[in-house]
Image 1 (cartoon, rainbow, N blue to C red):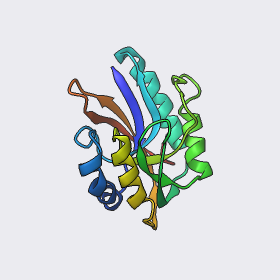
Image 2 (tube, rainbow, N blue to C red; image 1 turned 90 degrees about the horizontal axis):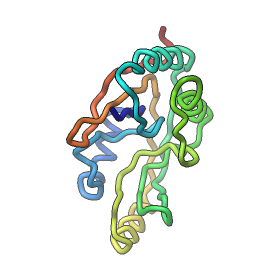
Image 3 (cartoon, rainbow, N blue to C red; image 1 turned 180 degrees about the horizontal axis):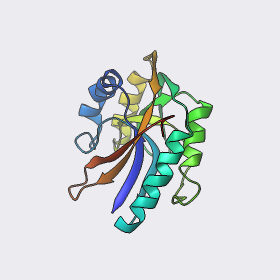
Image 4 (tube, rainbow, N blue to C red; image 1 turned 30 degrees about the vertical axis):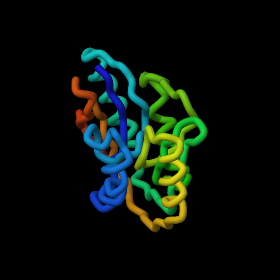
Length: 170
């Protein structure tokens, strides 16, 4: 089965992201706005007890932290993906590293860029137009991250929560 690990921001931040995703993200119906902490990975049911145990320990050893969003950015020229940029913060990078160590699959393909996708799979012209207007916007969103979720993918491609891990708790 395919699993992933993500942070779901507050409803307020999800509403901001969804105001763009409804129109510009074909994955809108498959998963709510989120910050990916660990890309999708395959695991067998028998492996899940060990994985969940390791995630509980990582959560226990990680204190809640703040994230800040001030602007949009993009992954162009690699892809025409536009996202709300999570400002670099040591805590989120440390959490990402922990989730790629120990017995957890080390499936990192790219350098970690914390973000919330708001537009993807756009044609070049549409990307240029949308990014041009969104890049002028300023955001001032700060919120506390106090949990992350282990997700699994359903047959229809949507994602659902398998378990939630609260930071700083045993």
